[in-house]
Amino acid sequence: MPSDDLEWRAQLRARLLRIGSSQPQSTAHYEPPTRPANPPLESLVQGEWITTAEGRYFLSEQVYPLDHRHGELCLGDWHQLPGEQWSPFVLDLGGRGFDPHRALFFDLETTGLARGTGTYAFLIGVGFFADDNLITRQYFMPSYADEKALLQAVARDLSDHPGLVSFNGRSFDWPILQTRYIVSRCPLPQQGDLHLDLLPLARRLWRRTLDSCALSSLETSVLGVRRDGEDVPGYLIPMLYQEYVREGRTRPIARIFYHNVIDLLSMVTLAAKAGQVLQTNLDLQESLPCDYLSLGILYERIDRIEDALRAYQLAEEQPTSPGEAETAYKRHTLLLKRLGRYDEAAEIWRKQMNGQDIFPYVELAKYLEHRLRDYATAERVVQEAVCWLQQPNRALREAERRHLLAELQHRLSRVQRRLHNAPEAGDLACEG
Image (cartoon, rainbow, N blue to C red; front, side, top):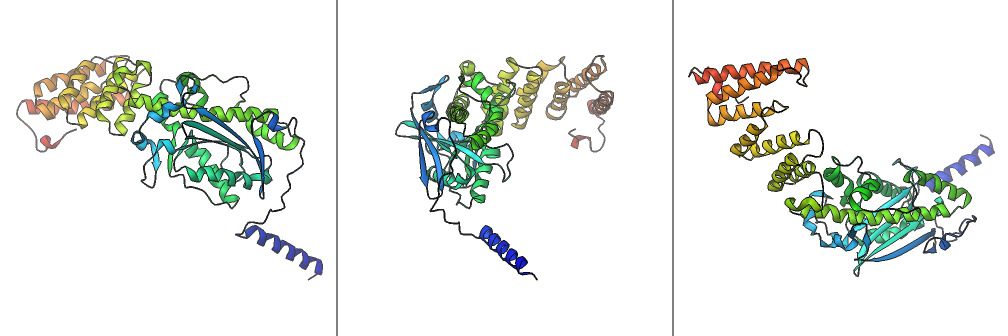
């Protein structure tokens, strides 16, 4: 084998061993890359450059008092909510309980929207409460070579706060952060197993009343936040960072810092607003408008049964979208039925007859036949249901109409047999 080939193989093997080594290579002689900055970032963003053995990063820290208003709420409103209120919405793998006072709000600005190893977090913003203030810290990575320095700096904040709060962080931000620590061979400072993601909660509260539950939409419609001209659209952020890496353009980066810190502040007040909605007496919700149907579904999911029933009732009385009242009364009565409160459900079914749905006829007929054994009234209700179904202009496909009609005729025959005291074997066991 030629000596040149042997030498090439030896070099390749040495490089592969270095890549596969579990010990990080020393960067004690780190020298920051020379890149013109126009103008210097520290002249646009309050903060300082910090250089370590692993690289350098820019740190911007700001302190906000609890009475600082961000939109319609103060930052300190988050402190007024008990930790146990959040337990149904927190990913809590360790069963330790979520302490909102010790939680770390975090938000990433990344080089793309994919969650693979090619996506970097170049700006990591965090916020936490200490000494009656909200402290925000933003860590900026000036080049890809500086990633380890950035991650090691952020690790201190992550390790000091056992709980996380994010907006879509459970699906996007946290997986990316985990990946960056793994790829960079930095110890992951925490497992993220106490994580309150505000996006799923916001969707449960407002998705039926808003066109979008993006943070920018919630800011406008729910929080009363108005961003100024310094903001930058999120879809431009990856491109602006690439321009900074290539050309050193800092003015767009300063706008990204603004975008990121407003995201952090909005997460704090969004959490406070959601908590207020969940805590407030439903009969006083006019000051905290929300989607009663979604709220009822949410309450039912977390076993706040009486609140769920009241929310469904309000959705029936104050619908905000087509079909909302119908969906609300169905969920309302099915929940009453599950609780064994059949009389209350039956009263609602009676009120809903002659509407745009066959559901109340069928449910009331079941109740009369199987619970009250009032076969005469059950017969009349089923006959009314057949008449309703045969009327023109019903929004039903022909196959669906025929199927319902066959079920009603079968039910009618059974009720009539029972009414005339001639039940067939097995009828009394049929609860269809």
